[in-house]
Length: 119
Length: 119
Image 1: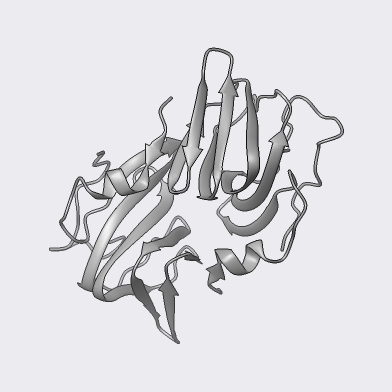
Image 2: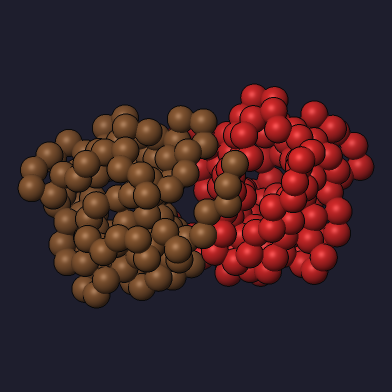
């Protein structure tokens, strides 16, 4: 049992769109990710997904609207809902989701990151 | 689907030791709580529990040590591990745990708060 400092963990990586696991609670994982530019349209058919913005601003595009999240704001994307994250400038985000969730969901491709990648 | 602003939610209540639910992801809940002073010794026999400090400083006392958490730090308290939260001055904390978890765990009493209390 060890406390986790978010700034410290964020200083340990620089690549974009590659979530790093920092903690596990039961079968759920807390991940940090740095994003910049456009991600791919995808959904997670089996689970909701939580975004919490730690620093910066991001948008999540949905089929019927776009939601902007700033530092200190969070959103639960329901399972099966297609979405495309985007950030004009680098944004630092915490994700919470079950162990085993792949970043690109149903749309595996060039942006699919290694799963269960701890820092 | 609506974004959640943590500062906005924190402005909606003032009582201590009474977690407010702000979001649900699958069968897990995100809660905000303001704490000050000493809580009770307790554990959660069936689940881990996550503490994320949003503002201020808190301590979590365990049987063999005390861990201090400051803003931007988090801790996963494993299921069944006895702990006692404490804050000398008001501290604002996000909790993540399964729906239905009672704040005082196995030690119900005066500090037991209403469950599933949304803001």
